[in-house]
Image 1 (cartoon, rainbow, N blue to C red):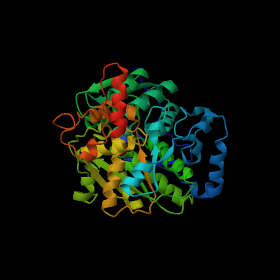
Image 2 (image 1 turned 90 degrees about the horizontal axis):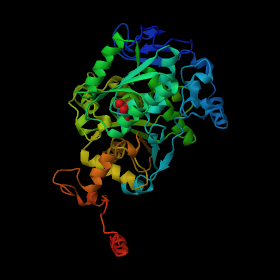
Image 3 (image 1 turned 135 degrees about the horizontal axis):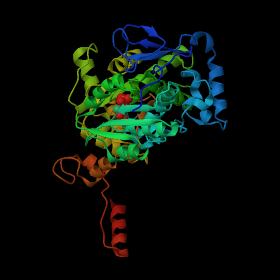
Length: 456
Ligand code: F0G
């Protein structure tokens, strides 16, 4: 690797500064590991001049609507369209964009009936260019990596970050290095990183081990880290919430429910909600709730066992591999936004995840297992009385079904839970399975199958 010549990872252009989330220290530059120079905690991006420069919410909303008519790539991006609330770039041409964002908000009529929540929506971030919500953050962070003069970008990943980073690096003329846990991520996600030209290392460890190694690497080599520790990622991911509010005509939902892994996304959505409230873009704060898999429940335990004061790490295990994370980097940010929005934190079992994923699938909407924790979690929050029937609820679906087809196939074929086809699952869950049928290639066989299906 040639000798490093890049400038600091983030150079302040006058419209934003880095602030430590623990000691509040403000700085114009961040070190390679994006940690506070004083106390080593995480940084966030803050905009000191907003109160004077962004004081007209109607003007901001009108400007964002107007950009929808533009043919400029930066306006067609569902992230950069909201660039008034992002770190400033000098020229529109600087943005590395795949026209990310612009994701649909779907009604879920069947799930609305079964949960008893008539106003139930899914914001499907799996409809992004590389099939996950990561693209919204990656477009911003990759852009700032290139501006800072880096040639290499790197990440540790459970799969989606690496797919997204590799794509944006390729578009931006950057090289990319991926660290993933060997055997613990889906082939679909790995195949994306390979195709987009990343140097892909399958390390004999878990995600948390990959991230630890990356944090050391960035202090030794001139690579720019694109994990969600990087606060530019979270700025981009904020736009999910801005676009959602625009789609709801600026009427805030009562609840937004999001899966929790490394906890960057919940932190970003929460930051967006606080900023939108402070700028007068919304008049009411939605409650933001985070749902984790039971086997990867570090935030749940941190809040229950340590009152959010220290991280309770876990040895993570779940088939929802995207959120198989035991030592979430952004736990403090997430705990803070849960408090700021009066949200809840829950956990769901593997069976509940599989059932919820199939229920979302039955709506004609494909998501990956990690996304389905939101519906499974909603059911629990209804039981607890935290979500009420007359409230509006938005589930954030973070990834596309095609990201993890093995999970879906194992479920429908009945291979997912111990004991073989269909064993160990309730009749309710079993009814959601649609296994493929192998038939003789005769008209009779197909008609018989059709008749049987009609009766069932
Ligand atoms: N859903 C999906 C589909 C994900 O890929 C991830 C995280 C999450 C939810 C959790 O989001 O970490 O911001 O709390 N995937 C990361 C990755 C860790 O490397 O792709 P989070």
